[in-house]
Length: 115
Length: 112
Image (cartoon, rainbow over all chains, first blue to last red; front, side, top):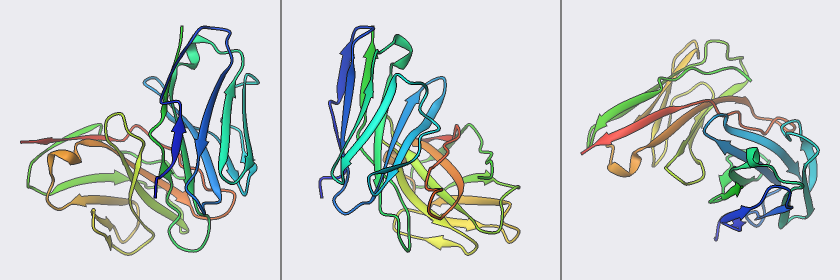
């Protein structure tokens, strides 16, 4: 099992540019999560999906952020336009919501730097 | 979800048991205690979880007090690879409440 796959691993962009982060969850998982981690705010949940449907997007900071999950094997997090304060590590995680353990498996993260 | 309190940092000698405490005095009867850890520059990793009874797996043991207001994660024989930030999280385990709310955790350093 390849685990959760995220791309790119590193992204450097200029303020005002559009940024798209990608995630491929573990096959068979039905929930997907996007987190952001910064030194100041720690690890925060941005949005999560169950069966490709957004369930809770209360953590999305503002309208510049959007997330989609067109199918069970792919999700994107888009920032448009990007700002320097968006610089962070963005993690994607997936899990299977069902009976038993509901553990989340995290990807390696995308380190975003906005200059 | 109930709030948790953890010491900001701890040291443990290599080969010894590492005992990481967590207070969750406002936990409700149907909330679980989860532990995750984050090794530097990696995504968080699930360790163990429990409701009332003590739990053990290949990574660690979880001891939950009888009143459920606190718990201890035990790494029985700590190695240098166990150096990480450990997060104690309390949450309900049902649909619509899958999110994990991470606090500041405990930074555990294993000393050679």
